[in-house]
Length: 465
Ligand SMILES: Nc1ncnc2c1ncn2[C@@H]1O[C@H](COP(=O)(O)OP(=O)(O)OP(=O)(O)O)[C@@H](O)[C@H]1O
Ligand SMILES: [Mg+2]
Image 1 (cartoon, rainbow, N blue to C red):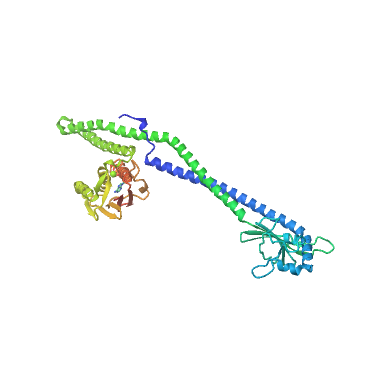
Image 2: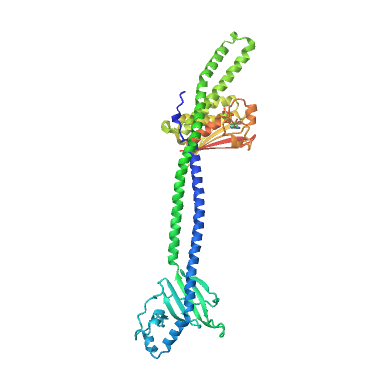
């Protein structure tokens, strides 16, 4: 048979599955590594920015505490002036009619005009920050920038305290006199507050960008990985395809000489008078061996062809499973009788499946002939057909020699036979169940086995209807 290297395909289901699994694993591994790195980067950056934010608050707080004496002096001067009562009437009040604390800009501008300057938001700071100076009584006196109403906590340590509240963060510090003579006298408190909105927006952008980066890089790595995998799998797939093709070719080529041997042996056996009596047994051995080899080569060729060809549904039809099984059981009835076995068929449905009739017949013939072969005389072999939802379920049950639990995982392997089968049932090559499994998989079905040694075996085939 001609061998065409160009016909090598990398599209066999095993390779596709393997490639998809590898790609998925690759993607997950890359995504996990990148995810770990970007999370670390994010945590470091966010910690750094938080620290910067706090440092800024602390710096403003220290400066604000430093000018407290000047500010308070101005405040005292303003409030003790005789005109203050009239001036106070012009100052803004809150909804409850309470006097709002005086803005620093307003306090400093009090001499410039007779009336109070309009209350403008702070001039020293932007609206995202605010400074508040409190009296030792904790009454809020003066502020600058945005006004954040912040109740002072009971305990504020000398070195200051950070408080986070409603997307804002504040630095609170008590102000003491520095003069050693008067000791540590409390002058008041200063609170510097900033909104975290800007920082959060910045961190959100960072998160989005890192996430997009991870997805993009992982996607790129997968595309590159897919290409690399294609390149590296190609030679393996080619040699595997070559091997399969070789098996198919070898089996095909073996058929002709085998048929010749079988035919010659038959001719010799049909004229026993022409054979020397001492050679009769040898001729019969040749005929038996040739027949067995014929079966083996046929199975090998079938499995090699199933392997080498991509599933082709052109020859598929709607098949009445009930009819197929009934015909098969009838076909094997003589063999069952000869082996003194009760063979029964119990259809509980008339399931129709879509598939290759020849292959499905082969599948159930293999299961049935196993049941007949591995069940001693007097045994019972039952075939049942059911339909559950959109699945046809065929069970081939016997009460024969059974299979040891340790052997069960191997029964579908090629050329695998149990020790018992090897010794007591010489006929057989161990390909029947491997063929059955390949056929079931080609029909998108599932095959399973349950067995107890010396009690029996049940093969269950599920096919989509
Ligand atoms: N119904 C059964 N009861 C007990 N053992 C079984 C049964 N069916 C299969 N086995 C075990 O599984 C092995 C593999 O079965 P398989 O049909 O693949 O090969 P085989 O019957 O030995 O040879 P052949 O290729 O001619 O079918 C058998 O050798 C046998 O040991
Ligand atoms: Mg078999």
